[in-house]
Amino acid sequence: MRALWPQAHHGLDPWALYRPDDPDAPLLRLNMVAGVDGAATDRHGHTAELGGPGDWEVFRTLRAQADVVLVGAGTARREGYGPARLRRDLAARRRDDLGRARRPAIVLVSRSLALDPASPIFAEADPPTAVLTCAGASAQRRARLEPVATVLTAGGDHVDLVDGLARIRQVMGPVITCEGGPSLNASLLRAGVVDELCVTLAPQLVGVPSAPRLAGDLDEPAALSLRQVAIDDTGELYLRYRLAHREGAGDAHG
Image (cartoon, rainbow, N blue to C red):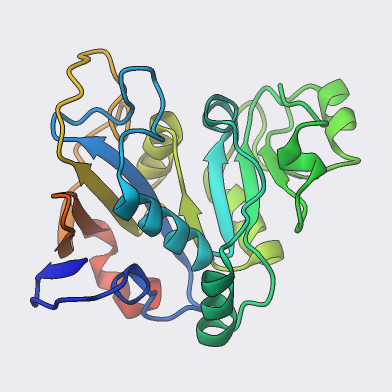
């Protein structure tokens, strides 16, 4: 992988490209892959086949640099999510460079709590998977999940993401990587809590007009400031943007 902008560098690894400026400061990243036509899934509605090996390396790296992996419950079901296991070399860099001894925790965002307590994402998780929901969620489903998950409540009839993120950071740490899907991405963008957008642009046209886009419906355009561009030998582009409204926050947000 080589950096193209703002400075050209050859032979950089994703860890160096994406390392937070201050690992102890709050940072929320959206990490997504898309085709050149903007489609955020392949023709079958999944993301796994859309990106190549370089995208998977970025995916693993952003997980290893995070305290929390945030994902919508629907995306987790569709993509067959399990616990956030780390490759040994990334776990070592996480420990030695960032001072993180434990793995990142998965946090599922769910209004319905239609989740299977016996699924691997709960049964095999270490640290335990958490669920962010709201007070209006089913009490019966909450009771089924509480023995296997940390259930965090924010908001009344709908999940309050601003309050929810504050609760997550209190318990689990400041650096959060969100892996979608587009509906959750849009909700986070509308709430004004996203610091960075990390997009892999796959060199293909998916060709499905109905395929979801990166961020679903927004109330208004979200201005972005380009931070870096990298490329690999397959032609995948790795774009790292900062949300323009976060520019004044300084390096404390990565």
